[in-house]
Length: 85
Image 1 (cartoon, rainbow, N blue to C red):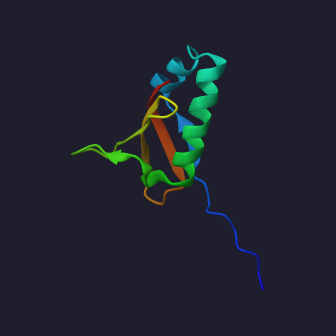
Image 2: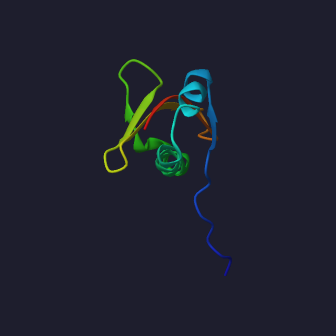
């Protein structure tokens, strides 16, 4: 019997506004953000759809992280537009 494979993760890319915000985060904030990015890369549907856009808004209340992103049609790339940590 062939082993089961884990779900394929999408590749995460950050655009300029998110990259600028990333440089301002502390090590602790970056660590919290990393966990949230892994979560949306595994399941891009986690976030809530923003009406009338392709954007999704994911908030992790426990870690205090918010990510606004969109996913390509085949769910192979997740593009992060905005982060808060």
